[in-house]
Amino acid sequence: IKHKCAELRRICSGFNLAQELYALIDQLKAEAMMLRNIEAKQQAEEFIRSLTEFCRQLETDQLANQ
Image 1: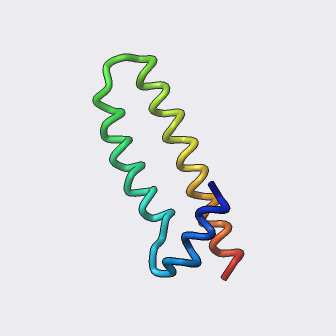
Image 2: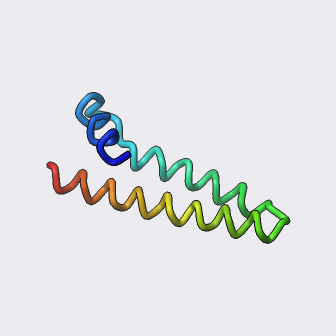
């Protein structure tokens, strides 16, 4: 996935995947708050944590490649 993200960065220099994913994360957080099932809520929170960590790594990689 990281390789494809780097490829996307080269093709679309004005596109910031990390920013787009952070917008998605905000939407996911809002949806997760409405979940009633505890297991589903925990799964959503774990996915959000993983996606957030992935975004941080993307940002780190972007800064390193500038």
